[in-house]
Image (cartoon, rainbow, N blue to C red; front, side):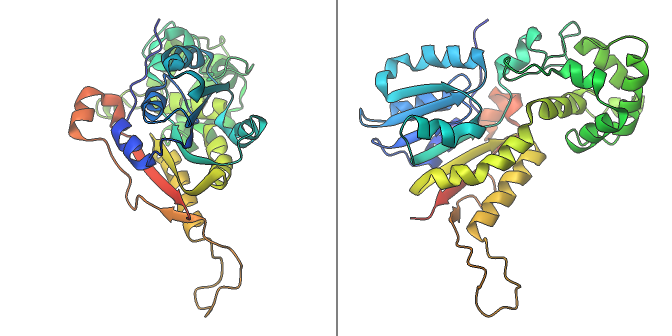
Length: 313
């Protein structure tokens, strides 16, 4: 199956990057190379684009799509958490712009064997973004304690029925291992009142999101990487991040705000004595959202938010 990913907020992101033809840019979540190819089109022969992704299918698709740009492109299979080390390894200390699109790709959602979706009953519980990793969603569902399942469904799925879902999972796996998306979805359905299911979208959506986030350490990776990415930017360089749920967005918003105003002195101090210096400016006071046309073309874009930070010149 062809690797497909609709690049959300594509034009808005490219516009916000303020691309310089001879600049160096990084796409830390390369995917199907939608954002990357638009960046590459705007680069001269002196410009450079580094694409990073941990998904082997994404790497293969991106290599094919970006091959027309020749030596302008460098593709690295890694997690964007390792961006600083990966760039230093190829002799790059600073860059002019970084893009992160934190959404799950259409390919990952639409290929049953990847196990990201609750809509295919026979799909295995996998959900790995990097198949070199040994832990899978199946391991979390069958091996985590009831308390840990409750914690991740509550915190990462923000599901008010988390306690009941965790309890049902533990009860059912005691009878037989939970192997497929269909089995897990049915258990979740039985954990949530029917009247809620009629209005709240697919009942398994939040739990599947929670397991995926836990498995791939998505929030930890984001939280631990933001300061490094801001430090990698040249003066005037921009970091553009597209998030798809409130947990990611909150992390990005809080980090950007802290890097713009890092002072920890009490408000009544006449002068700053903490020594923390601002690293730049938050360009997006409010996040940029998809327009009506994009929402019509791609329903998966409806929760997308773009936030932008510019390194101090």
